Length: 121
Image 1: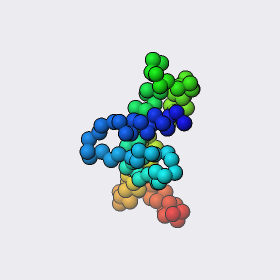
Image 2 (image 1 turned 135 degrees about the horizontal axis):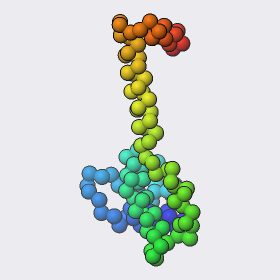
Image 3 (image 1 turned 90 degrees about the vertical axis):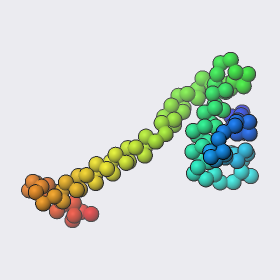
Image 4 (image 1 turned 30 degrees about the horizontal axis):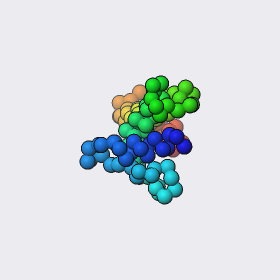
């Protein structure tokens, strides 16, 4: 596909610091194998945005025919870290609440809630 060819070109041409792991040049093809987590992160944070920018820019000689449709498709996909942030917030809130329930001076209602939670979990 056009996007995959452009991505391969960006991976081979882009100069990055030595400490940044470079994904395989033939990413997306069976011979590339399975990507490691670090390669996925680098691919989606550095290489793919650069490849897509040249395909979406109106004056680009590499402009894709479907460039007008793609921003709405990727609008939600480019919010990296939102799920992790939400899960971390929920975990932190739950841990804080549990700690509050375990306090010896907690109100009787909270002590009752603690008993219910202990029976449930």
